[in-house]
Length: 185
Image (cartoon, rainbow, N blue to C red):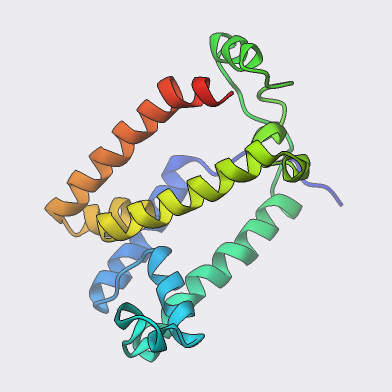
């Protein structure tokens, strides 16, 4: 059985996110994906090697449901709630991406040239993945959290550092999309 559905509209998903944030704030909890990586490393014994991981991870165990929910929710979304429509891109964007070497931009949710298994055969692509991963990890630590933590939890609780971080994320994204990505491809 295949369902043909569109993404949830903002007036459904937005209030659901607000409800979850209100519940988290009420119970004194925070949301963010990067904190889960710290918890998982602590569970695995990383506290023996670095004081950063030496803390009471049991207090943060509840947050691992976020990871589990993301995996299960992603599976459900792709398997049962996806209409396989790809991405509706501006014609000028399609032309720019084709000039950079992307085949069929917008036909899939993410470009196969960046996220397909074929990139594992390319030393350049593997190097970009490793460098990108290190930079994301460093940036997350340096900013004191990830994009979801700052943009959802930090902004909803009116934290000035989160506002600064989110502005930095947007500036970095604009620089990447307009200046660095064309140099890479």
